[in-house]
Every structure is written in structure tokens, then in C-alpha cells.
Amino acid sequence: MAELPADTSALMSAILEGILYGFSILLFIGTIWFLTYKRRMQDVNRLIAVVAVLLLLVSTVHMVVGIVRVENGLVKYRDTWPGGPVAFFEDVTEETYVIKHGLYVFQTVLADAVMVYRCYVLWKSVRVIILPILLWCSIIVTGVRAVYGNSQATSDPGNVFATDVDKWIMAFVVSTLVTNLFCSGLLVYRVWKIERRVFKLRTSKGTVMAIVRALVDAAALYSVMLFSFLFCFITANNGESVLSDIVVPIISITFYMVLIRITINFRHRPSTATTRRTIEEMEQGNVRQYPMMPVEVHISQFTQDDSASSYNVGNKDRPSTGIAQKS
Image 1 (cartoon, rainbow, N blue to C red):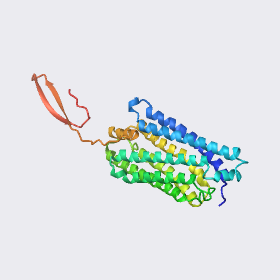
Image 2: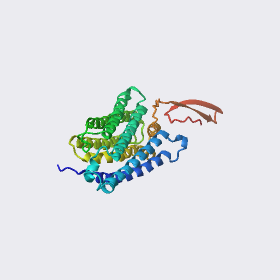
Image 3: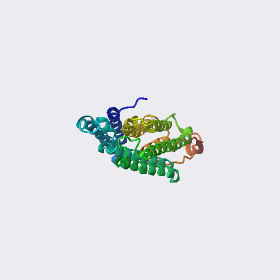
Image 4: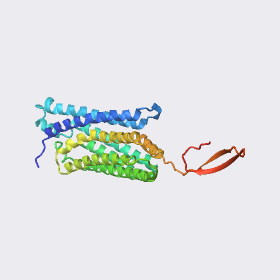
């Protein structure tokens, strides 16, 4: 396999990240619109809105730093950096390299925290999220340690695969991969249980299962990126630098994609009241369970008999309509 030069990979990652960043901006606009459209300010989930804004800000800063890094390596220090552009982009102690990877770690920690939060909201159990919380803590520890280790690398800083922090980088990627798969599995299983619970009451199909598809699609997209990144890192391929850059906007894209698809299916598909409440509150991050009990309504009917000049009163049991009427 031909080795991808460091300067080529840096330019390629900047182009691909720019494309994905533009797509994430469109999804961000859609997310904010869906969160606020025809809703009062007090009804908007401020936590989700803040996370959406933070993800966009981190992606923006990461994109700007990436452009500065490319400009420094290919233009500013092209003739003054020892070894030229290739050596510049291979140096893991270089300032823009450290900043970019620090932003990547922060983006990952933020997105995985939302995943853990969603699990807690749906399950309403601390015991369920004990393992995800431990995995999330391991993401913080390994991520911070990897970034710090790169900034302080002394042995062969021009080769990220030869530094003494390679094990921390792999631990970070594995931790976030396991967290993503485990939390996605918990969410999908919980939503599937809700779907079964309201299956007989729904008037249309696919409303809740659309949530499952959105979660599975987002988890699959992110997992493929992480598996690819891990493969490139294990095989010492410079493609890992490209993937580590484009994964930042992809994190934002997966987050926005789930919210938008849930909201679209909720607003454009008819469903039972219980299903509507479930989808709306999951979208807002506040899902509760509402027990549904059969209701029997007794309707009193008064009939006038003109011939006998008297009134007969009869009670008839009718199927529940949810509204008691008197005639």
C-alpha cells in the first residue's frame, strides 16, 4: 500500500472537512428551526439547543485552525521549516496539531455526554447508565492524556505512530466506539419496547420505528468512521489524519440528523396520543411513561314517550370514545 504523504493528507482533510462542515451548517439551521418553530421560548429545550450551538462552534474553530495549519505548512513555513511541508505536517508537537486534536477530544466528550444523557432520559434509571458513565470518564482521561502526550512528545515527534502516547490514542478511540455502540443499543432497545407497548393503539405504522432507524443510521455512520480511524492507526497509515479531521463535522451531523428526523416523523405522521407524547418528549429530552387504562363510559339516554306522557330512563354501555356525551 502506497504511503499517503503528510502534506497531501493535510490538504485532502481540509477539503473534505470543508464540505462536511458546510453540510453540518445546513443541518444546524434545520435543527434550530425544528426546535423553535411554533414553540414558545419556555417550551424550547435549552440544553439540547446549547449542545447544538456548542457543536457548531467547535466545528467552526476546528475548521479555522485546519485552514491556518494548511496555510502555515504550505505557504508560511514552506521554505523555513526543517524538512519542508511534509515534516511540518508530521510534527505532532506543532501548535495547530495539538489544538485541532484537543478540539476533537472536546467534541467527542460533548457528543458522548449527550448519548449518556439520552439513555438516562429514556430509561429513568441510574443503574442503566453506570457503564456508559464509566466509559465516558475513560474517554475524558484517555483523550486528555493523548493530547498532552503529543504536545510533550520528545522521541520522534515527527511520527505519531512512534510516540509513547499511541496506546492512549487507541484507548480513546476504542472507548468512544464502545460508548457509542452501547448507548445506541440501549436507546434502540428502549424505543423498540415503547413501540411494542403502543403497537395495538397506533393508527399508523412506522412513527416510533423511525426513531430506531434514525438512531441506527447515526450510530452506523459514526461507528464506521471510528473503525476506519482505528484501522488506519493500527496499520500506521496517514489516512488517520484525514479521518481525525473529518470526524469532527460528522459528530455534529449525526447529532443534528437524529433530532431532525425525529421531529419530521413526529410532525408529519399521524399517531396515537401516547405515541405523540413519547416522540415529542424524546425530542425534547424528557420522556415519561404514561400508563394507559381502558375506559368504560356509561351514557344516560332519556327517551320521551308521547303516548304514555312519561319518560323512560335507560343506561347503555357504549365503546369508549374518550368523551362523555349526554343527549
